[in-house]
Length: 147
Ligand SMILES: [Zn+2]
Ligand SMILES: [Zn+2]
Image 1 (cartoon, helix red, strand yellow):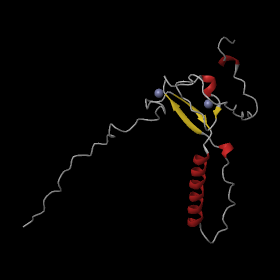
Image 2 (image 1 turned 90 degrees about the horizontal axis):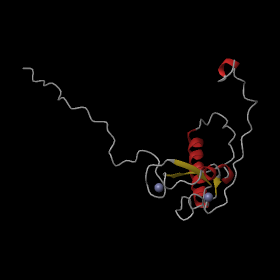
Image 3 (image 1 turned 60 degrees about the horizontal axis):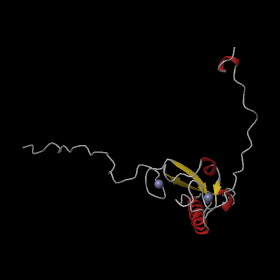
């Protein structure tokens, strides 16, 4: 006789994330959800780690490359000048808006409560990207208060 049994029905797995996982960036000082962020330079060891990862990644690309083809010219490795790290702060541990617009030194301790809303480094002014052309002018009827 037919002894086939219908497959056991399993309840759909609930796709909810465990509640212990953080929901995004958190303040580096107190762990509260971050409200603001700014950039700082990498420390020497962070930069070394970054270079090591980049070298590893490139070695893997070379390994997987088609040996029949000439490999593409390799880009120079990133320099410390072009890398920054994002620092997150909550509302309480937020540096000033002016300070957050700058790039901080790798040794900057912000957000350090003793220095808030400032910090203990002399931040660099980021180099502004040159704007491509000039902003296109809006039609007159798009300007509030225009004709
Ligand atoms: Zn905080
Ligand atoms: Zn700083």
